[in-house]
Length: 98
Image 1 (cartoon, rainbow, N blue to C red):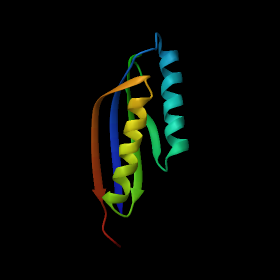
Image 2 (image 1 turned 90 degrees about the horizontal axis):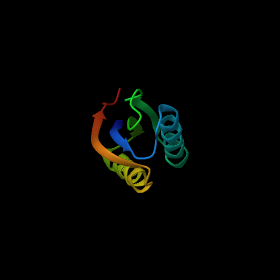
Image 3 (image 1 turned 90 degrees about the vertical axis):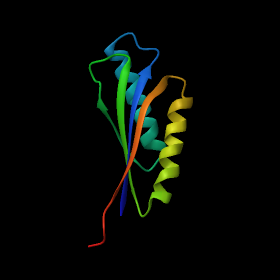
């Protein structure tokens, strides 16, 4: 079993308040969850109105089955036009058979 973890920091262009930022991030997380077989949540920078951190995870049988999905999510986020990815970290955790 392999767990893929994608940690992304974002710069948000539009929000002028934390309330607007929460709406943008909530919408982005909802789109990711509805379009891809992953778990996704805002994981940091909750007190900054132009920054966000999102964690995305997926479980699969190999890195080759997970990597294309996480790369597609990254492209979708970048092409949304609402945000810019300022940092990304991709990690794979391998677990042996019991």
